[in-house]
Image 1: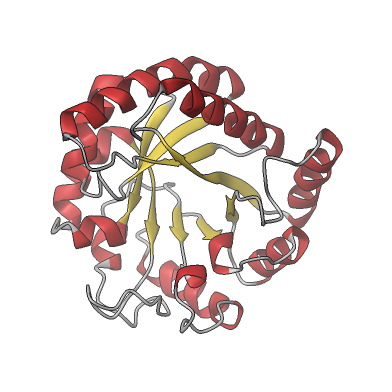
Image 2: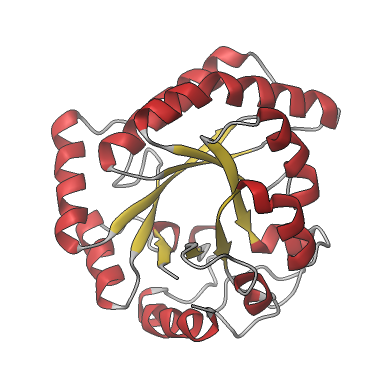
Length: 260
């Protein structure tokens, strides 16, 4: 089972250094955080995109996912969301990413209205995603943090170019067991994202296996060959220890848990 590392845990680190760290410590792929102040961003021109793709290929690290902040269920008109989806899909394809990560961001209004917005937008974007060879994965997060909340939306979209990214922290915070989440998201699952924390009241990221999240229970439910990614949310938690010294032990911990 291949392992990916989210560059969120290495904020501001140049892409060549992040790829080298991943390869050196047993990580097979990268989730590439996409933001204006990061090495991977929409503003990269065509030459910069080609150079980034070559760099990753040379390092032997797969660009698994472009991790965007697009909210597919966000309140407001469809046009800006669809434009953002198109721009991120193009960047993902240019870099060779298999997936584009998006959030729900359904907002404070009725859940049915948030679902309707997301379904409409994802259906509109799905053919473009399929043509580019990129799968849109909606993360279990914010307004749809439970698998049981996200699955009905994805059932309605019903397109192979749209699926789910299982963030274990958020389904756990929603009170779901891994087994229940897997039952809900199984038909749509792209891969799983793991992390560890001390408690629901302290979400400061910890080294894998030193907190309370049911990582092993999650991984044992994944089909062979499914990716598992470590997202270390360093930018949101100033007290978090640096990630780089923990990359080797993190890969070893996950490898010991993986069923095959």
